[in-house]
Length: 403
Image (cartoon, rainbow, N blue to C red; front, side, top):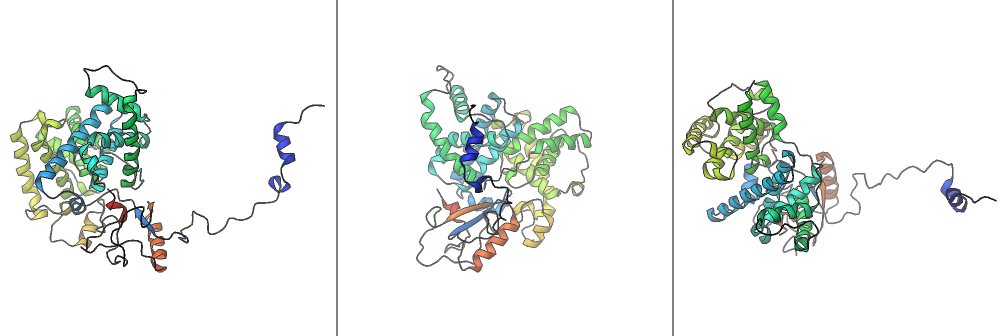
């Protein structure tokens, strides 16, 4: 007598209800995918905000000039490290650009003293996460080994199995979690370069001018402009600045491309400031004399005067305009003023001296604004306050104070 196949034996030995032909019972209406929030006590909702305003970035940045200078130096060094390692590993530009955006966000939302001193570890973690997001997978040890061999060319090269990397790999894994939280687990990244190529073809730009604009579009990721403007705005600003440097002007109908001239000029101002003060750490900076950049900044300030009345303001808008006007005119820049998705009308409950993530509640990261609104209404309707305002009146989310 032949042996019974294993699959048939398992069916024969299983209870009748496991292989019944009856239809499955309907799913419960209280499934985890529903918007009901029963059982989520002390839960905080954090919706992704890929774009911030100038005011929100300034609130997270250091105030004193000395610390600000160190912050800029660390940021540029980290971006240079990402570019060098990225080129060594032959990453596409989208991976390196995503890594620089992740680094900028992590430095804004995390104030760990270690990350401020060891920017290389944060940059390595950002590049590691960017590899996953952009589907250019590399192990963390490959990235770290490449970095080590580049920083120590006089020593014998190491491979990915070297014990020298063990401690650094553990730190990278810890920093990776902070980077994911700072991005609200939102992996919808788009970059300026594809838009730039289309704009260059549209305006009939030469190959030399297009190459210059491409280099400018890479340098723009070394500023904080990618946190404030959408990719097609960055592309228009890069092309506009390249035309200014080459003394070739083309009339661009910004409204036709759902853009605003004042915001494009704001991005150009960030680029000119980068080229004026830190030209050595850029691609385009050394190609022109410093007087060229100063002349362009003077001309740019004259062009921005009708928008700002001679003063820099949020998102390049007039400081006298109200928030509703900003929301209408700058719809492509995130108009929200409730920084980090907080509600200023809800006080701290009595007896709570400080709010730290993991000690007073759980964070739920969301992308859909409608679902966020629905769950907030349900949570606040049950009397459980999910977001607080500290005594100084500055709204802040619990997880944002995590060091």
